[in-house]
Length: 91
Image 1 (cartoon, rainbow, N blue to C red):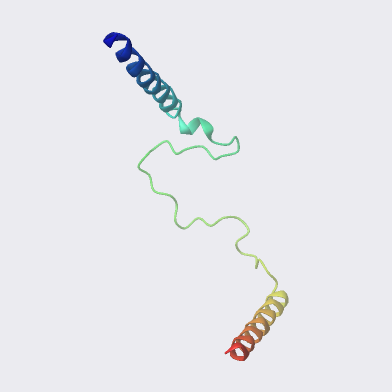
Image 2 (cartoon, helix red, strand yellow; image 1 turned 90 degrees about the horizontal axis):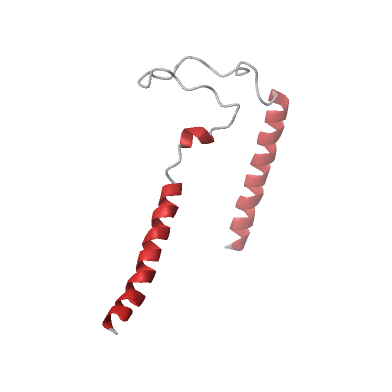
């Protein structure tokens, strides 16, 4: 009777340990294999520094034209003034 009770107690524990080991074993896959296909290749020298002065392409052009930027800034300033007035009225 004692041996049957020990088996009933240890069997679920062994099963849980086995399932945890299998689940953790699945996490050990190589993360480098999961990189997208269009990712740039890795550097051959692991200790090399990234180039600091190399800028991404198209950084010389303004992202937003100056006229549109002025319009956006004016709209934001008007919204800020409306919120300040609404907060002042709420007090």
